[in-house]
Length: 287
Ligand SMILES: NC(=O)c1ccc[n+]([C@@H]2O[C@H](COP(=O)([O-])OP(=O)(O)OC[C@H]3O[C@@H](n4cnc5c(N)ncnc54)[C@H](OP(=O)(O)O)[C@@H]3O)[C@@H](O)[C@H]2O)c1
Image (cartoon, rainbow, N blue to C red):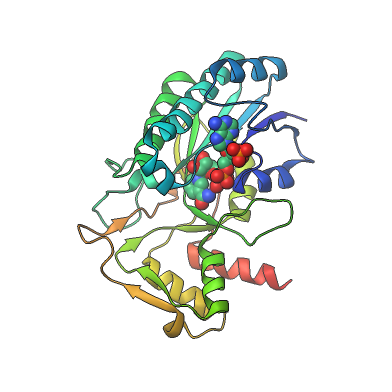
C-alpha cells in the first residue's frame, strides 16, 4: 500500500476522505496538534519521520467570512501552510495535491463556465490567498497539483465533521418553513462530497498543474435552490426567495469548466453537473 498523508483529516472533506480511503492506502492522519502546518519545523519533522509517498493537503481555514475578518491568520494557514507542505513534499519526492477553491474566480465578470486560463483577480482574502498558494506551491514543488474545488455538500454523518452547506441549509429551511434567499446574480457549481472523494485517487497521478475540480453549473444559485427544493417535493415558491439585489456591482460568476482535468486524467475524473449531482445524492439518501 502507498503511504498517504492527509492533513486536515478531522475536517469536512478530510473525515470523509479518511473513511473512503482507509483500506486502500496506508494512511497518516496527524491531528492539528501533531502537525501545525504554519510551523515549518513541525511539518519538516513529521514528514521526515513518516516519509509519505503522497501528501493530500486539506488543512486550511475554509470559512471565507472568517478569512475576510482575519487576513493575517488566513495568510499564515492558507498560504504559508501550503508552502511548508510543498517544500517538505519536494524534499522527499512525494506527490503533492492540495485543495484550492473556485473562489479564485471571485471577481470575474465574464459569463459561462470558467477554465483555468481565465484571467483572475480574486476580490476576497480567501480567494487571493488560495491563488497565491497555487503559485507558491508550483514554484516550490515540482509535482504540485492544486484542485479548485467548489462549495461541497453532504448530510451530517456520525463521527464526521459537517459544516452547514447547500443541502442542509435548504432542508432546515423546509423543516422550519423559513424562506431562504438565494442570489439570482450568482453562478457557481455545488458538488456532492462523495463525487469529490471518489475522484480524488485519480488526482494522485495528474501532471503538476492547477485544475478545476467539481460540478459544473449553468444555472444561477436561485434557480439551483429552486430546482433542489422542487426535487425534494416541496413548494419552492414558498421557501426559495429570489435575491436580486446581491452582487450589485457585477454578477458573481465562479462556475467552473471541467474540461482540463477530464482530459488530463484520460476521462477518469468525471463529475455530474450540479443538478444531476443533487439528484444522485437524493437517490442515494433513499437507499
Ligand atoms: N468545504 C467546502 O465546501 C470547500 C470548498 C472549496 C474549497 N475547500 C477547501 O477544501 C479543503 C478542505 O476544506 P474543509 O471544508 O474540509 O475544511 P474544514 O472542515 O474547515 O477543516 C479544516 C481542517 O484543517 C485543520 N487545520 C486548520 N488549521 C490548521 C493548522 N494551522 N494546522 C493543522 N491543521 C489545521 C482543522 O483541524 P482543527 O479543526 O483541529 O483545527 C481541520 O481538520 C480546504 O483547503 C478548503 O479551503 C472547501
